[in-house]
Image (cartoon, rainbow, N blue to C red; front, side, top):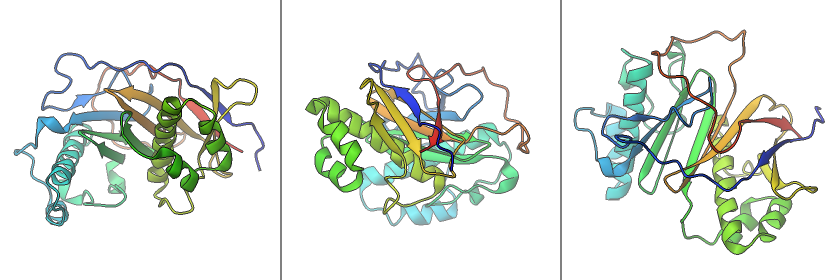
Length: 272
């Protein structure tokens, strides 16, 4: 087993991402100023933009939509799938949308050369595309919830102790951040919450409480992670960097090179 220490993640005061003019237009926004350089591309869409009637869902997605009775949930489902559809049209032109799953892991046909990840929460949808496995999650930072009870049920004793030592407002904020990181990991590895949410751990450093350490279980080296704030949401992303020898999928359309993450430098997730 690799006994290297876990990577350190510095938790600075978050700097809000302020979308530029047209960022929330009906045509999807590519988050070039947020994505890791040479990493996954992220696409954002607020639910307030409404559904795009020019992009129908595939048959399986329509069947899934018909099982959802809550109007807000129906809109979230439709808009998030249309967001993914537009992102795929940009990066994988000419592919058949009927091959996109309606639910569960977003496993695209191998010949597309892309992995997909998607999340939506309280008015915002985001999806990511990359040549390697990835997962993402987002949560509004102002969400009202009994986070201490959730932490006691799902987090490790050390994580609970770190959160309990913080002021209540900060503890809730860090709980939501850690939750999105854990959810992103489960989505990237296609695992359920039960017995798996403690695989990814984020704790304060013993010597410097301002530095947080991120670690994954053995045999999961090589992953990277990043977190940022988008319009009041925590957005967390985990991905496997592309290996130099890996077979590359179809080339994506030329786009502006994305600079590093604004808030936190991507970090190496090492084995504990």
